[in-house]
Length: 67
Image (cartoon, rainbow, N blue to C red; front, side, top):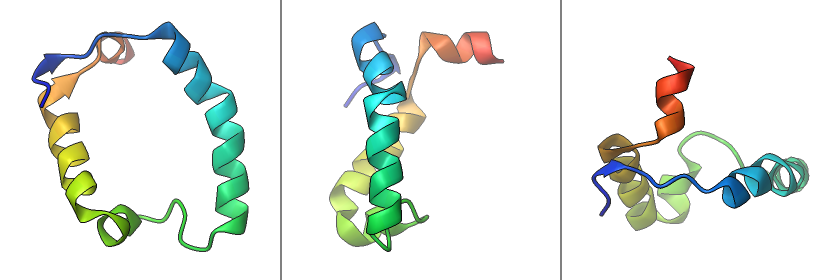
């Protein structure tokens, strides 16, 4: 588990803003439960809990610039 600041990755950030955005739009149109709140707990509860803890215990340097 990561505690503290996450290491930024320009490559992953760019991919998430371009390719990922298109894939999410298609999935949201095709899969009925995709993107709905709480669906991660139904599909994979172990990963959902891990992600929740990870998000609360780590932070990105870009969060400082958003505030």
